[in-house]
Image (cartoon, rainbow, N blue to C red; front, side, top):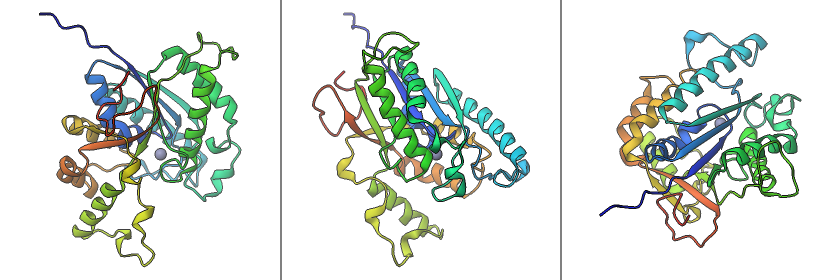
Length: 293
Ligand SMILES: [Zn+2]
């Protein structure tokens, strides 16, 4: 008996910085690629204000413009390597400047991604949507997950682009209108965030757990909002390999490197998401982002 070929879909993920693709969706991207689907990764900024963890680079991007430029180049190369490990089919690095962490002066710099023209970026993204016709788009929630201005901006431009791509009145340089069928926000389940903090505490690491104003209700995403938990256990090795390929940001062999390897199979077995657009009622909890298509 012959089986009908399994349909293949396209997933498009929009992220803020190089390394977000690996930390937030590394498992999903790799798993989706292994299942024969097409994966498109859009990274909005060049991450040129990232914290440099590799002392050999000797870069102080917040102090020297030349270091900022150099860091952008380093991170661009790291992004390409990580995307290859994750089996990403198409990678677009939009190259906007990093806005820095929430509250930094750089948030308001005219060249910062957070200050970019939403319509303009959305039009560019909408062209990619019409070109690649993704069934599913993954990005961040309204708070950008944790309040980083570039993550918030990524949410805004992505949601605007999805509407624009579907708008038959809007003529763009790339094909007919396209309606994305499912939209997901990345989510770190509150229970998992809390478990991580407790385990880090046991390892003797300083965490916010003992802060007098510690409020678990501020951690991650409430579990009850999570619609979708994708088991990424089988691709965790590749996820960590991709994440630690961002050597300017992550040090191989340091505490965190060991931590994710030891605790990962138990603590990070799932990547969680919130489905916010779906053509049909969801059967939650979902384990497959293409379910119902
Ligand atoms: Zn980021």
